[in-house]
Amino acid sequence: MSNPLLKRFRRKSHKVALVLAGGAARAIAHIGVLKVLEREKIPFDLIVGSSMGSIIGAAYSLDKNLQKTEKMALRTSFRDIMDVSFPKLAISRGEKLRQMVEKIVQGRSFNDLKIPLAVVATDIGNGKTMIYQSGDLTQAITASCSIPIIYNPVKVGNRLIVDGGIKNTVPVAVAKELGATFTIASNVGFCVRNFTPSNIFQILMQFYQIQGQALSDYQTMDADIAINSELGEIDQMAFGRAKECIKRGEEAAERTLGRLKKRVLQKLKKKILRRSKSKLN
Image (tube, rainbow, N blue to C red):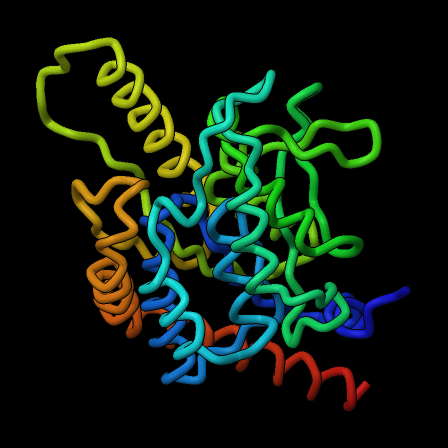
């Protein structure tokens, strides 16, 4: 079934995309960013979400109710998304993760979204970026959040699909590929600590954080506007610090607001000017 929202998006000459980065608990900061954008009536025509960014994007796009999304985030703990079962390819089968996504989606589909959403994931078999804008919404989001080794890959047809963040932690390039002419990236970064690792697990985690931070910095550079939440040493599993993440997301959006309004206004003026010229011709 074709999605009328997507058809409308494709017809627009000026398309604003809000890009929501992955980051597990750190990505809860997106709620704070959305609060400011909504309050200031900053328009966007598309949400592109990777990993936890796709969960926040879907929750907002389905209900347009930030209070509900915030309550969900504040009630979520690490135990709500992690079940240790040791299947063949990971630590967890991802059942609890899927159940959490199902609670948000409630059987709805991409066609029920109030704002078009692109869910970004990765084919672990060949490294290809997978972009979902139709099909099973719950499955797409679960796949986008399935961190390799932690969660079992999600089988979609003949493909094994995993976390979008391993390749597109801040999927600005995906937004542009989909036709966005202006991109606002909400970047939550990674938890790189200043310490001396004392065991193999700490070295592995620090390696993951350093590599992820480098990728998110690089990909954020391509955005027209970057909203960088300063989350310090709040790690990806710190769901108990959701309230702090939301506050820091709000603060980051407030810091960027003047520049964002100026850029959006410039784009709108150019759009009006183009329309006026086309009418005269």
